[in-house]
Amino acid sequence: MHFAVSLPTAGPLVNALATISKFLGITASMAVVGALLAAGFLLPDVHGKLSKSGLMIRKVIMWASIGWTIAAIGNIFFTLANILGEPLSAVMDYTTIKSFVTQITLGQYLLFQLLVALLVAVLSIRIQKVGGANLLLIATFVGILAPVFQSHSASSGSHGLAIGSLCIHVIALSLWVGGVFALALLDPEERAGAANRFSQMALWSVIAVVGSGVANAWARLNFASAWHSAYAGVMILKVVLTIGLIFIGYKHRKNLAAKAPTSINWEAFGQLILTELTIMIVALALGSWLSVNRSPLPIGGEKFSVAVTVAGLPMPGAPTLSRMLFLYNPDALFIGFLVLAVALYVRGVIILERRGDKWPLGRTIAFVCGIVAIDFATSGGLGVYAHFSFSYHMIAHMVLGMIAPIALVLSAPITLALRTLPQGRTHEERGVRGTLIAALHSKLASIWVNPIVALVLFDGSLFILYFTTLFGGMMQSHLGHFAMNVHFLLAGFLFFHVIIGVDPNPKRAPHLVRIVILFAAMSIHAFFSVALMSSSSLVDGGYFAQLHAPWVHDLLADQRLGGSIGWAMGEIPILLALVATFILWVRDDSREAKRIDRNTERMAAMGQPDELAEYNNYLAKLATQDKKEV
Image (cartoon, rainbow, N blue to C red; front, side, top):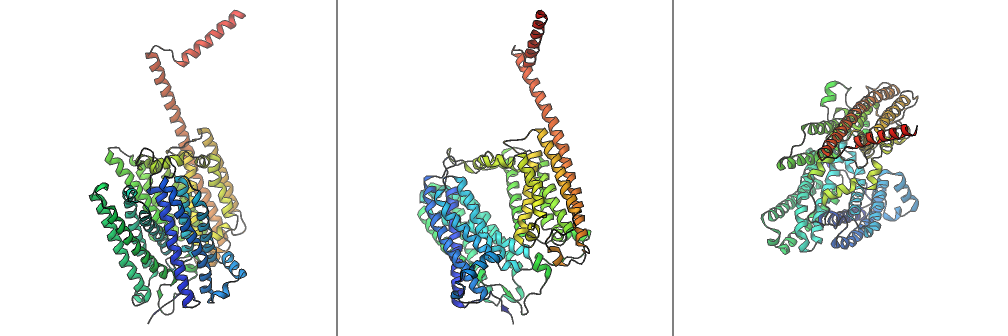
């Protein structure tokens, strides 16, 4: 006999209201995603500005985000009532609410979601450009995902797989459902171009929804006891509805591919979209119920483990070469981004091959090396041991901040994107490629690629992270650990892009400046490592101590070992970048000399003296005049 463990409840009424509030919030937030998607991506822009239809959709964004805000407020109250097991009247207290949203992690995430919804509601009516719509779309995704990191998946033994797969599931589902909502918003004459563009994105979203859903169910469900529970019945029904939605999506794509836009019955197509949207709303309602109720557990519940509770994964054995190479604990969120990056890169290379253009094999190899290094440092054996030992954390840090970024920079992803991204559908539309070009030449981009800014983010952030309470706090949560790894990767990519990047840079620094920056980076990194090695106190805020890893006997010695590893692994890549910069400098000078020689030969062939000869004649005249005056 088994039973389903649920959240503490304040009664069936409050539990029902919590489910309704969650459903309305999810539906409203996905409507915001769809409206922003329509305004900034599906509809043609006019030289980067929203079209007339896009400006009209702003009202939809505003009202949907207001609905999201109201649902987020209700979600705070209903969640608190269920946690305390008290009626709503008991939690309608300022002090109680304030404590929940300021001191409890779940309350902080719910408050953050509320603030994001309110921000989108305020700013939505003011956006004028595609860039503004895209920024609001990113903010909306961040707001939607915030509570996910404190959902039931956060308590799963497969922490990284459960939370990461749920995040991917939510993002992909938001794009899929939101896109269908966006098509329903548009006039029939606007659906032709929008439907074709959405069809390609929907295929990727469906694959992500199905894959992440399977991974999340595998991580959370106890299959030996789940099948006879109400939870399993609701999940099976949701799966059936999802299969139906995939079939409708297939009909959409087949219809669009088989017929010209002018021959499609857009009225019937719109009715099919409304049917699809109705089924999606039912599936979202079932998903809301699943999010309020926890998956079934066997009698006796989960076996308590400090490692699982604190680090999110079981304690591994003492590190060995075989364990380091073959141990794997998937961080699904990182894996999802890596899979997307690989898919886009491969697609770009294939597009070039079909055009008859060749993409350098060395760049592809560099990209593969970078992706493998990231996966090894986040999900592989190194990523696993980085949760339990500071020295292994520092190795993972160096791989993410030094080795992987150099490989990715040499793979030239921006150049590949500029050569393969689709252009505008009309002569007035920027399109995806034009938007990327505008972003690369923006004032914000010029600030990021400033060598001083890149150096501060690359090396200066180390002192803020490790010599404050920030490091210990970020290691305690999956979101903090994920954000830290993303920072290492992006800061490293930016720094090496500025120094040795082969991608376009609107304000590339002179070689001498880059060499000075590299010497500064070496000095700062060495100072940081020495400070870490000579520290007499732990910088992790007690994180590693509470894990009690049996193969880490002295935490302070392990921290000092991490400092020495950081020094060695950090200096070598910077030294290699220094050598590469010297080589690039010599090559650029050689190319410039050849360019001058070609220009001289061309001018001589045209009967015109070259600039150097004219300058020598000028000096000779000056010397002759000086002799006459003497």
